[in-house]
Length: 214
Length: 214
DNA sequence: GGAAAAATGGACCAGCAAGTCCAGAAACGG
DNA sequence: CCGTTTCTGGACTTGCTGGTCCATTTTTCC
Image (tube, rainbow over all chains, first blue to last red; front, side, top):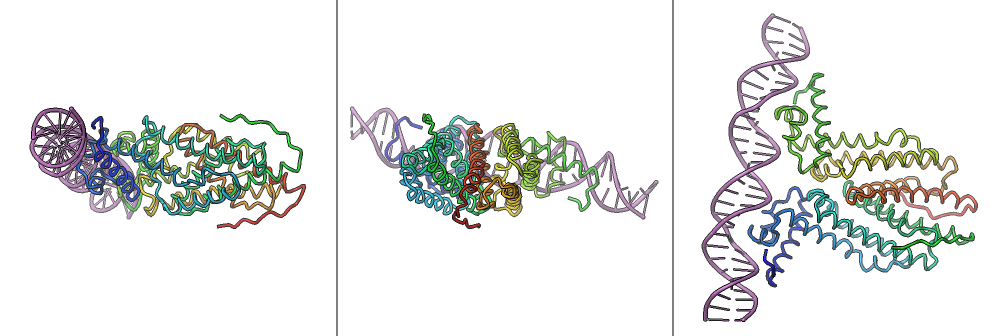
């Protein structure tokens, strides 16, 4: 590829990534060939390799990054303002809607299996996504704690980690079974847990140990 | 394949499935060829197609079933006797150990992505696995309820669904990041939730909101 | 306006891996 | 035993797909 992309070049590259993402979502990673992507995006073989010198894997990685960005973006603005039970509920609904409408396609999951988790870039993408996602949740839990809606004795990071795991698993099960009940159960149970902690802690005298936040 | 398998035939077929499972776990689904399996299991091409007339996909499906059976088996006997906090803890340790030692390989997950979730057999396998797994967990929660260790107001099926989602997500994240913290957090938080419900409900006996079951 | 750089088109290549085929060995069964 | 079935070996075919190459067009920028 060139060092400098012209406006046209950038547009083409973006078109390829977006088209590839669609194709991959529709047909699955294993079944999608470069020719499918080429024909869908109205490009030629040389363009594919021009913009993604590493070939197929390179392109898949770009799509993975594209999809990863979408994941958090689709949860906004709710994910960024989890400071009341109401906003919490709004976020939950947005999350469930997002994945239900996505159907049984999990571009990211497939992508990583195909590219290989060990490849330098792949693991970094998912790692960063999980980190940010969990950080958002943890921040929301802290906000609830500050508002006295959640017991200060809970460790926001641990609760966020558990909730994130529940979400991932819920989505995974939904992909496999077509049923979003587990996703809902995971989020709702976590919420109930947080709610109950407050009802639990407040009446009693609480020994409030501070929790370090990185 | 023949209608009737001789003892030798059954042994060969089993050898192929087990060898294929190992190979797939080591090298990943996408990277494993029939020739790899053939050479590892000391068989010939014609044997592969003799025992799995549908070819590669057919074999992958058989391996998927094999791996699915292992998942629950590896959690026994603990998964079958979740009737005290102690046994619950033993199960938890066995679960975490199992997946930590498995490293970052998730045969089942990859298998389904490769074979295609929509294929007749594939979905049925994962569906049945999830059903059984959740049933075991729900039964365990009911046992705790019977023992007065968990509030009777909780819906065992919903709690089991949420826990199962947490486990799946925890494993998934572990595969991606190499860190089992999420898996532990998911199980431990769910356990804490169950425990707290008892401590919560017994002293007061308040009526909580009912939870719908899908 | 023109040289250099970037973008594009598409023919071509090479390798690989799934799947086929048939001949022959082993096992069964009466 | 001997005919029939099952099992096994391995060479061969075939189609596909990622990747290469170079000629041509378009854009950039002085």
